[in-house]
Length: 312
Ligand code: AKB
Image (cartoon, rainbow, N blue to C red; front, side, top):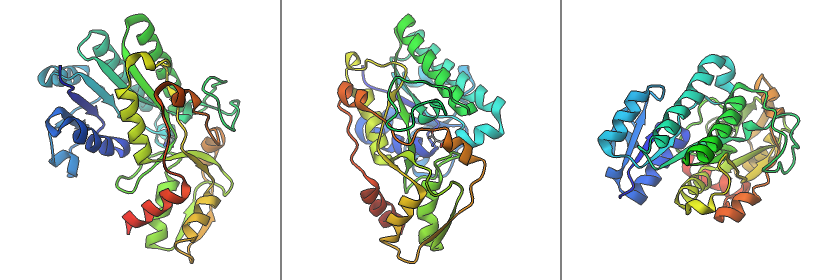
């Protein structure tokens, strides 16, 4: 049976890039993009696009049947900063969309599910440096609580119902072609835009706040690789730690200054500082390396070159 993919939340930061990549691999007609709203962007205009509410089980089921979907990528979610402003809706969206998709897989209407988790599953009591795969997890944000709970359900659906669900704990993601949507790590994208446009940036995190980050190309490759790996290689059915680069606002600013010598940065920490302080500074992803041969390519220097070149 051919792979037929449904991406829910295809117009978001990861969804847009993922849709392009999956269409290049599986063919435009085999990747159905969907989102709550129809934006005038490439992925909407270049292939099949459907408006779908991730909270509406019947709508998703209908699309699965209509297009004979085999794999679902559920990318719709409220991220950390936005979720803190609307906790009830964040919980509803982040949890119930996952249940809908897991239940479709349990009913054997689809074969495989990808669901993104996040470094937000960790909390202030987690070891911050080189955070292990298995460790203390006491998240303090609504987003983190929803992702940690989601991980438990993914593992449960795999163990009890045999659902083939695969997941990655994404760090902060950095891309030039898509804007982030309401996360704590968003500054690391904004800073490049403002450096080019205004030559200065006011950062909402303090200068020495180290966070795990990753260039979007690496994140997309990881997503494709974990989904293409033979099922028996996927030993962790909650979610895999994934590491790229770790840096502070001060370090990324210094890297940008190598290309834009007049660039200046100031710091005005807001409510997102507390969220960042509760997250790891760096991640140990040796389980992903061992189980499905994961390896990132981009470091801070090469990512900065790509970002500035493409945003110009
Ligand atoms: C956020 O900042 O909320 C996200 C994430 C780390 O999951 N980018």
